[in-house]
Figure 1 (spheres, rainbow, N blue to C red):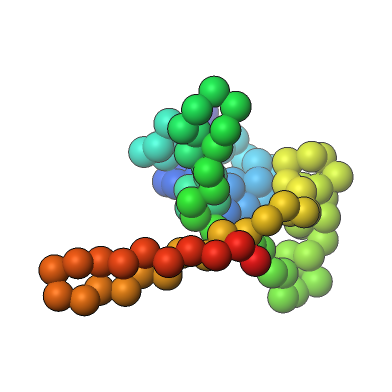
Figure 2: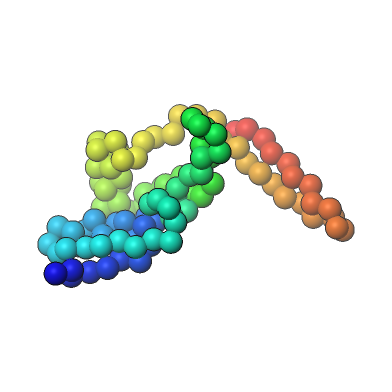
Amino acid sequence: MLDFCVIGSGISGSTIAHHLSKKYSVHILDKARGPGGRASNKRFKQNLSFDHGVQYISPKSKEFLKFIKTLCKKKEAKIWTGNHLDFTFEKKGNFRKIYWYER
């Protein structure tokens, strides 16, 4: 018997499902092809992907920091050491300029 159904597999849905699964049976539903919500990425070539959602996670509480460290130990999350791209959109009339730079 199913105890809980969580709608959405983003950071919030995944977190609540994780905690509920310690005592209950849980099923997660998501409209996307894979988990992650806005923290997911999109593949556009064989071995290339693009993170298009969450830019970073900045834990503010001790509990959330402990949870993120647990994810890193399980290799479900990692510290990003690569470059970051920032896209800035500027609309003038009917045209839209896109600026980007590496941080």
